[in-house]
Image (cartoon, rainbow, N blue to C red):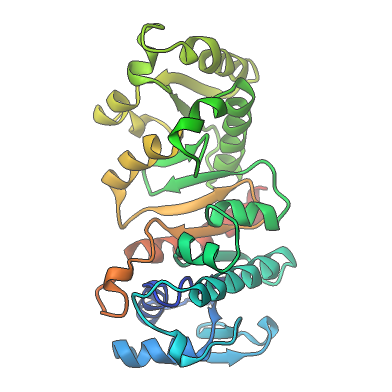
Length: 331
């Protein structure tokens, strides 16, 4: 069955258009339907600049999209003067979010099976009036989802975050029994329904160095995290921990688990990106739609120069297909 995968352009002055064009030019779509959400002016500009001879089918509605080819659905109006590779601007932030909004609506109404989001600039989208810390929170808001989680995944490693884009000073307040239980349950269900893992094993990391060292460095592990894990075990979930984050990744214990719950952004993403940069995918668990994204940003410093690597974007596209197929089968 053909999967309709919509791709938001990302910031038009970043590497989003480049990695989309380069990847789709090289890929055999094999009965899948790819729909870029952008503007012909953006796509034609980067085709010329990068010398990519990619033909596309310009459509006015997703019902016109055809298999085995690249389709382009105009999602915003843009003048060529707005296309300035490497330059942060309010307009580029606006266009990026208009493409995302189009993708969300197409997935919500069942016209698309998954959304792949190319990188946005948080600064640009906030200049455009979107008061959001990132894609994840915006997608949750637009799909009316209260229980969601950022996960970074590759073939061997799936890391979920208890808290995402917040200051370090606010992290401690997010470490509660309720949050850990809720996010562990969410990860468990996502591993089963999205990743087709029949009996998921989940590791929970501690908050403090050495997982608190028996309460000497901090008591959150004893008073909050361990009780949450016991309750999850009583529900029949295979959840263990809390583990000291440094040793857990250093001795490769992560290879024994299907999912890992980190307490905050950098605790999970620094080791993930060290092990997987350019090969990882950002996935939002808990949404009613499938959304994936590359694990990197807009890379304004190399935008429009033909240097951007398509590895992470390609894996995001492939994972979007696999997750939508799994969700149709297992959810």
